Image 1: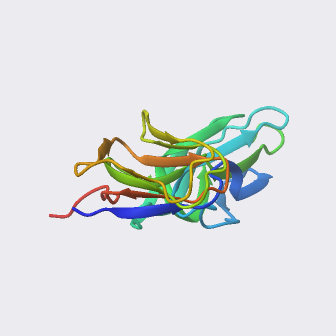
Image 2: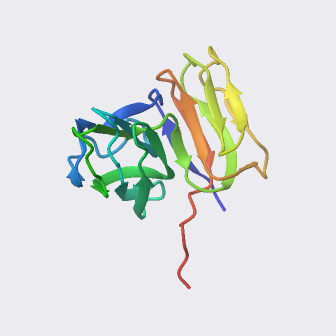
Image 3: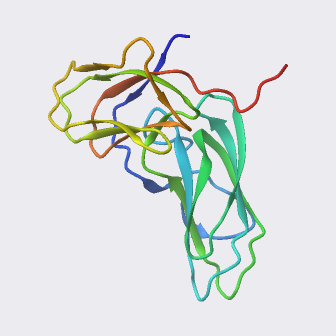
Length: 200
């Protein structure tokens, strides 16, 4: 199997209001401010609630969009009263965000919906074949899977550096995430995201 690739040419810091800016919570569909993260891959979706005059019962948020592999995705995120929740699925695009089960206490709590830190290059287990540094690294870049750091590229690494992991590559579990706080330009070569289910 050959490798596909994902380029990261933007900071992958979390943007907690990327998809929904601060609004009063309510049952129904929220206006989606942006359809995708600022980077080229996917992200884990976050929802953060601020209690106003006591914590409301938040219920759930249904996320509809596409996954990292481009396939349709529907996921239900259980919201946390007066706190933050993060999806277990990585999304490439967001089509709609719908809250259900919300119940007010006294005054509507507010909610923001955004993306967690890190460019999800692959949303399933797979193999990392190599990493190409396209510009002089402004800040360290971490490439990790769901449980561990695979490689950290140091700040000031020269453009044109290629990290090659041999014919077999390096296996990663759960997902492959590229994280940086600078507008570095890094390309990772990896296997594609496996579909969530297969048709026989």
